[in-house]
Length: 413
Image (cartoon, rainbow, N blue to C red):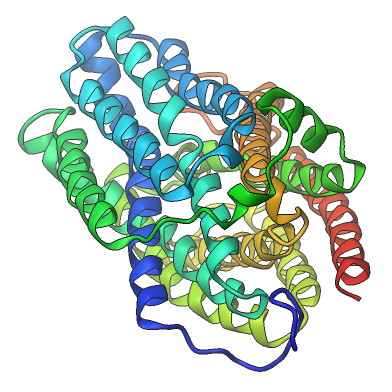
């Protein structure tokens, strides 16, 4: 009899319920990512409307990541004590309320408070979803599932940036948040009706919540997965916040062309993700990860050394780079999801998600100390140096992910 987590090259079809669960989890992921992504294109409108500085807007953005990181650690103490379906719906309800508060905010501090509230609930939804995926899907199905879930990132780029700007220009900057609330409310109702309870792990629990969290954090094998995830986020977020400014001020792209650029990249990402997911299930996940990492390194070198190039050249380079970045995430998440034991999975995923958020915040902070800009319209300086830091982070991540891969091989032997 085959072990549930045994590695097999045989492709196993999804059941009708699994397909429905993937759809709901993917849409959940889409709405959460959309809420995060929508802040960037709305930045200029929010700053002008509320008469706040770029530094103050930076606090608005970082407050989400900080609260999400703290929430992840707190959630880790009790994540494995509840039915995962109920836990998901509870935090998703809080996320919907927080997003509604963002739309209703009419002062700077109300908006900061609303983003903190949204981060507390939205920041752990991904980890709960990944725990559910690991519980109801076999090892050689998870790569495909991760690919579908990551499509939320691409779709959010297609819908989040162009549509949010369109709605904000017609009405006001709050309009996109009301749109997200409407979409998320429909997904929430579908989750209540369709998703089945996920509570097989409850029979394995013995420790009190705080002791369980500490044992998860202190497990040296789990720390291998945590460190790999942290460097994955570090490499990704070092450059991401500065993409729009680099395109406009260094490459010379018109501000009005940015929505189209992000839309094209989003479409390309959607096409790439399922392919990478299938390859991850069919071939060695670590090999796929290394190949995608090397592709990303090449793309980063080209991207950070671009001069004044045509729009289409920038788009092509961005697609290659983003494809490499996202293609690293799928096999990496599939590998990391196999690290914890069933009884620790919820706590592990919560801590992992928390570290991911915090590492992203540290990366954005580090990137801001490296990059310099003399005026608001002058080119960004030291962008090549930033690219080298990204490359170093990627190679460290390759080594750390190899340790994860090695651990899983020994575990499943």
